[in-house]
Length: 425
Image (cartoon, rainbow, N blue to C red; front, side, top):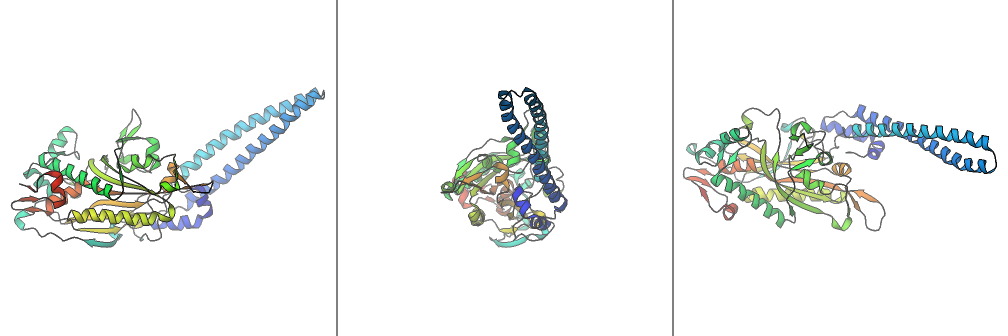
């Protein structure tokens, strides 16, 4: 959430910047500023009444002491009326502040100056690409859903029976390969300085709000209505919320965490060929990296996180490309996002496997996450960042498809020690 002070001091910048996200903020920003003026006026009236009542309260005792009972009683009546006025102004002030908050949360994060202008994913800017594109023989060019069935790795129909579409069952070497990927990612992240945590898979409403999933993505989350809890769409939510309402010391930064979790997304409105197999699921596994950093160092941290994710796809020998998202393809909360895509040889298309983002102070303001500056009394909002390192379903799809041969599926060398086999046959 943008701070009210920032909006007050940068009205034109906010409006012009959000045009890059194809968001017209003019009416909303003006409504916020107008509501804030009403808040100030109401607060002033409340404070004036309080000051008058304090003055009169002191006078009442003196009047009684001086034997001026009639004047003292009149002052008491005036004090009683002022108390009622204060109650009215206090109640009204609370309503205005609530209305102001509801307006503030509707403003997206402003994009970084480097964000390309565009409306959809076709307008994203390719930063670089790497890896060797696989060349498959026509006799060994099956999509991963056929390979999963042939080698009994993943049972999509069984998942439908147990739960519904989008909840696959991993079996045998498929399950072991999945576990191998999770352990590989966690180990690599730990080597890069990230501390592993194992968070809850459900969060409360405050946590959902803190990282920006609520109220923006409420329709995409599974809601446990009886307990008012939400199944997490990513480990970013519980891991970042570890620091909600926390003031950290400057010398604690940067804070770097990694977490494995199952992720749950309703994916409402997702249909067609691009959602087949592992391409789009309601439940999937993902390893996440989350960082908290000082504002002046957060973009260096973002570059570091992007470089780290790049090493992961390189070690898996997957062809990849890195895209800088345009304004129209960015999330509500992000200031700058880089997407990683790997090439799926059998499907002959690119699959997104990671988003690495800097949210600047947008999440921190919602979380009330601050850091204490050494030698100063004031606290400052931190910057938060996160990235997938990595999301497993499409990584699994690309590994199966790109490494298939007539004799079986070759396992990337870095995974062999984790899964205990070098080929699926």
